[in-house]
Length: 182
Image 1: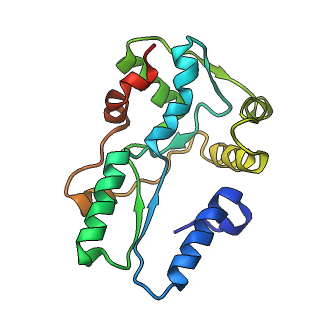
Image 2 (image 1 turned 60 degrees about the vertical axis):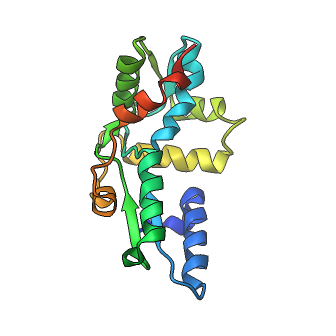
């Protein structure tokens, strides 16, 4: 379920608008609601490759990184097994990890130290201005602030649908280690 207030959040509203349109359509709709994509960590690839610190306004903010292979397997199962029609599936990875913990796992897997620079939200927003429009950056900052030091809820949906536990962030990092190499 989308959080209350989704209509007032530009990121959540885009999801709400799509779901509303799909649910109004004359077809059976199954909605996949992934939490945080593990792939979002690729945003750190450039500073890691350059040997620079990763700028984080909330290094203690928790996310539930889900591997794209798990998403693909759930989508495949939903499309091929009629028993999943009409469901609303919230998908998460198996762990609630802080950004700092994700960076630590990347450092272990890449075999290189990765520094984190704790920046204030406005500095991060300015750094991202060419990549993330202001209202979306504000929505991300609000989400990260709300989850700073607070583990996010996890689901067992990936396992229920696919028959296997979701892949860990460390597995994702090993699968994508080349993205962080020189």
